[in-house]
Image 1 (tube, helix red, strand yellow):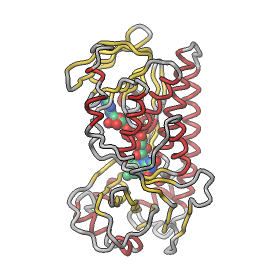
Image 2 (cartoon, rainbow, N blue to C red; image 1 turned 135 degrees about the vertical axis):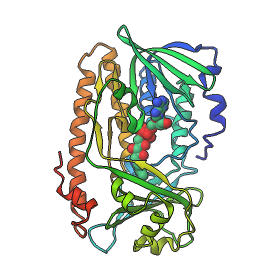
Image 3 (cartoon, rainbow, N blue to C red; image 1 turned 30 degrees about the vertical axis):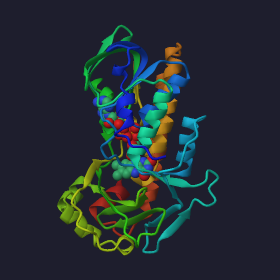
Image 4 (cartoon, rainbow, N blue to C red; image 1 turned 180 degrees about the vertical axis):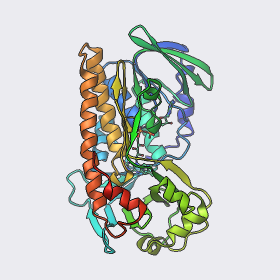
Length: 387
Ligand SMILES: Cc1cc2nc3c(=O)[nH]c(=O)nc-3n(C[C@H](O)[C@H](O)[C@H](O)COP(=O)(O)OP(=O)(O)OC[C@H]3O[C@@H](n4cnc5c(N)ncnc54)[C@H](O)[C@@H]3O)c2cc1C
């Protein structure tokens, strides 16, 4: 599916243009944030008969990270969109993973025998725009380029004020979904704190795919200061990312193109694949520390996806987690709105348990790499307690 997120959606998805709901309206649930987790929640809610709308800060044009979908994430996406087919035009089939981790010898993991089939490499904006279109076809109002400015309790529900390109918007709702990603803006406004386990940050460049890079899979390479990955993207592009702690990145000048390129030139397998880099002028920097909210839900609100908890991109599971927690939180909200008072609390507890399992898996995976155990990046992960 080839979708230009900057064109047709702009004209068709702004409910302000619709006279059915004016600039002030009531919904069962307002979803703040229209990424994969928020859209998964909105679609699940509407299918369950709950009126829901989405407020999204961007117009889906800016670059977003997260470009590899595992076979099971793909299956989850198909299930979310069913009965609409998930067209694969514009996505690139992914055959697996090649990782140089723990030794100089690359390990291969193929999706060939995976019961869910292949994975996929996606242009992330297109994926989110695809989900947004599906939400639109189910009559989910979606305000783009819209930022929440004010949240206030009103009776048992909420009054939400937002700024849209057309002017101010006021909505009332019974519950809120915080799908604002790492910033967790709804939860933070309730005073909920976030706990960090590390200071991981990604520095990525999107370049034309060199002719020598034949791999149609994810390539990962551990390095003394952190780790790299490369993934082919649709349209003959390639993403190259370096991940390390913020202070390590600063010390090596890796937040700037020259320092980043110098570190890249010390890789072994990736440099062979990619060859000499053309001058990289633009880097995308994203904080992606392992972290979670101390409470993923409260009275009349629930956090989903990265807002609730962020997993290391090493897991390649953020999109899957966003789709799943979006759906699970929507079901918990349906139960809560139907009178099951403990539903959101149960959901938050399950999320916390899932996060503990993730922490153990993360520690076990980093422990496989012992070659640079004395370097800051690796020492911190090898020494850290899992919980
Ligand atoms: C370098 C890197 C590589 C990654 N690679 C992968 C990968 O290969 N596979 C994978 O599965 N995961 C990957 N991830 C993780 C994945 O990107 C995230 O887990 C996923 O995007 C989380 O989705 P989300 O919907 O919770 O949050 P986001 O994608 O962050 O979406 C949040 C949305 O909320 C909107 N928003 C924010 N604030 C407001 C506001 N105040 N009002 C309205 N809207 C707001 C934003 O514009 C955005 O649309 C990677 C992450 C990084 C950093």
